[in-house]
Image (cartoon, rainbow over all chains, first blue to last red; front, side, top):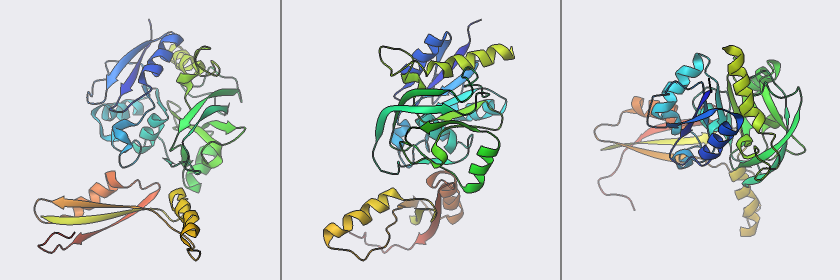
Length: 226
Length: 85
């Protein structure tokens, strides 16, 4: 049976269509989910896309956290539902306490939009099983508040437990501590990533198709679980 | 109506790039003796009845501040009858 991957649209989401297209290209069905609707329609995994949910008012992701759909997602994530937050989605996952730390203004204050090298540091999560250990990929980064911050204890814990999923290589675009581009929760089902795998799934529009592995990974993960 | 004022500031150990940008701009004003500028947010909550400091604290803790990176303080503001300009 075709896997069903939910893609949430908040007011201000921008990359929900791209995420849905990436899901489709990976071979799954993209199911639109709506911020004000608590129903998850039996999806096998959920993606929180990039954009500026609720206008980034107060703090990026701060208000999206209290939407109806997030209550359901937080509960389902606790039961092992794979959840991926991309860019603004990563910010929402931190605000919802599904992931530790916070994403703050880029240290140099500039919005950064470029193709970015990453190294996959953990290929055991629900969203990275398809990558080789320490595989290097190039996908776009585009953010103004992508600087990953956490206290020293949290950083030590993330490093010790192998929960840094990807690190920036050949230049850190936003000042993130430990060059962190992506992290996971202890169970490995929730992943937040600041750069955009959904923009690197087709040769015509992306710098590579390296991002597709994120979406095929979750299908492999779901297939292995069944 | 009663007002509670919440001040949200980045924790001291968190880098404040906006504040740094302001420090870097000050020499253009001829100001060269400022060591540091930190930028925060001031939020005014108007209660319909009496000021409820405990509820304001709850609002600040859950929504207005992110405790990972920010601290907050709050106080009830006694307002004169005439609106300040």
